[in-house]
Amino acid sequence: MAVLWERGEATVVVVREALEPERELAHTTVSTLLTRLERRGVVTRRKEGRQ
Image (cartoon, rainbow, N blue to C red):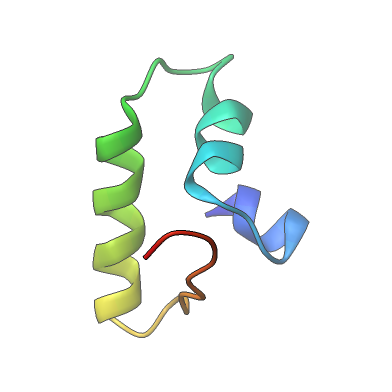
């Protein structure tokens, strides 16, 4: 979550790349984590591009 607090807004790819030096995470893992945080009301989602 520190990545989001530092950047304000971030895509799944940006969050994943920021965490890469510490952990190797799959795109789907980060996406699932952000979806769960959204359901809890911790973060909000804004869809861009293809939907």
